[in-house]
Image (cartoon, rainbow, N blue to C red; front, side, top):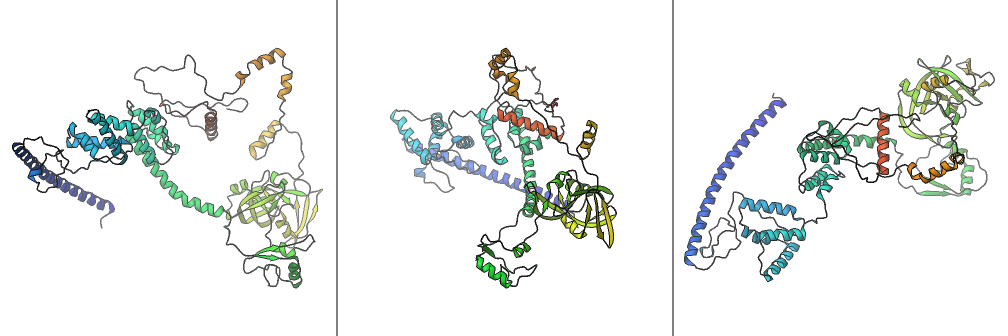
Length: 594
């Protein structure tokens, strides 16, 4: 059985034979057409000679095309242009941009060998609409003055009437061209402007084309350093197709991620049912559910969805039926997030596997939480869950998207298997909340000695907490060590009042500073034009200096991009398409800025 490579080679050989046969057929047809053209020209010369011998009048030219049929010898006229191998149609013009039309007309005249005296008649015959009205007016105006419209006059008048104005500077437009839409539209506009400029070198065209591309395309082909415009366009098209394929691959994935993270889509509109206060009291007395007419019990679920509107009063009522059907609200105390241990909380040491962790036992948190950093270090298998908000005491909700089930924890020799939720905790690895405390039953706590006693597996267990945290003075070495590990450092700085500083300045110095206040202002635009502009003279024949940029760390790269964007917004710099380039050197100052 032939392989794919052999099949492709056989197919290429067959296509080569087919191409050879087609070339032979084309040569044969061309010879036949040449013979037919010679016969037609010979017949036309004979008919012209006979007509001149029998008539003394001047021949009047008329437009007619040869269709291969017999001519009427009494009405035979010399052809306007000689027939060629292929049948060409003269382009029509109705008044739009004449650039393309003149190009096609010149090609037609060159191919057919049209005489100068016949060009105006042939071109004017194919004018339509607004262009035809203009031609009628132009011909009458020149006829009244007794002048003849030559081809040069015709082209000049048509360019003046329908051509673009001289206000557009094509060199300037080409140097400022930028890709805003698709690559095809950008290439089309670049070629249109490139056909209207002169004196541009191939290197300048390549640099301009590369500078106008989108960054995602230009960055991918700049490493190949194209030498010609054809090579640059080919590389840009390949890069554009590659990005298009990548978007098609990532689009379904992004859609899937958006569907998994987006809230549940709203269901169809449900008819609203109103319940008055009397109806609520009646259903409560009968033990019926507010939503349906079935008997209400703990864990009761209605069969179908309904929308209820309760018209209540200010009277206090027992809302056990309402709260029983509501989902529990996830909460975490503020000190659990920051890692600080206030009163009625206890920190103990535990182990997850072989790693020691710091656990905060907090009755102000509803569930058990683990820090995102610790979960990543332990490589715990995460279960995808619908994102939900965790309520914090400061009112700012936190998003929780990860759940870890059946996590084994050794709490000072006592094994537990818990369900944990990931949150960005600071200074803590684990928070055990009410969901864990409920499993212990009766707990005896001694806050003075930081101990907890409870019954677990029919044995009395005891947990010993870590000593209380106190604020104390530390050395710079200790702060540095804590910061290198996982501690959080906060600094409070005092800034002097500038107004009070100015008051202590010498009056003479103060007047001098106010007089030249504009010198100390940060620039917001390009410097003004000076008598002598700075420039660097290069020796003849030296190529533009183009040094590749250095490899920067990610934070230096981000700082460079930020400063460039800030200077662009202020107008201190502007985009450049110059082939010259040099790397940027980023130096950090003593005050921490760049």
